[in-house]
Image 1: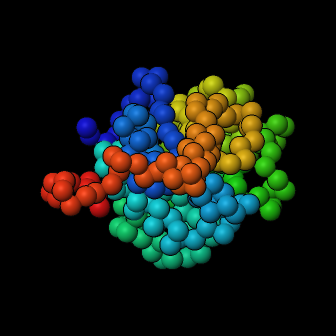
Image 2 (image 1 turned 60 degrees about the vertical axis):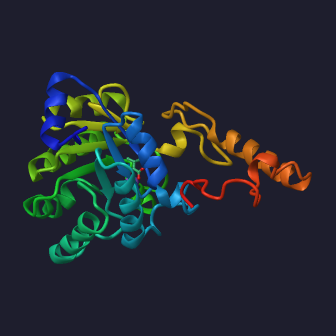
Length: 279
Ligand code: KIV
Ligand code: NA
């Protein structure tokens, strides 16, 4: 299977074929998402929340993103991988920005990078695109700016905000972005932006008019101990409950000595050439 590319993505938009994107943070999540047919994987800095347990994405570093991106690339070798540029790694000089992008591509094995912001980052977007690296924009609720926005709230609710989002989307397209993530944006505004742009929009909490959708792996699968419902998420499994039950049973089996059982043990009188799998 050949990985998707940005030319095909634009064609998919023209043909009305939705893009299905999901985050992945490590080797098994990437492998499973690829096998399940995801079009794109996002190594999101949401890993700060769902993998590291921070209360925002701000503490996530470039090293963190390189490390996780490389694991994802190992797991999904036939899928287009977009890696987030973390907090403050694309706001300094163009030289510094390009050095950071280089690491995500060469050490993180990403195919593209994602950056939060609109017209104010168009210069950085353009420089990265000129270096041959596809850029996915990200506007609406931009979690790296949570302290400036003053919370995680829906964007585009008044006319001025709607216009700002449209202008930012157009600025990103002009700067050469291959697509734009719209996060927590009203359906009306996201639909209008999707119609206006020739590049695909990928929504999260942005309604039905987007050209694709993205969700966080741990949200889709309820893969957390304390899952809280979010209106824009649909859950498709309850991994948290399954993991808790599985480990509870394992602990009980060890305590009552029902694990290991006969079938798990080695003896001298059995063949010694048994394969031990991945050991
Ligand atoms: O980090 C992330 O998971 C994201 C998505 C929410 C778009 O940026
Ligand atoms: Na992100």
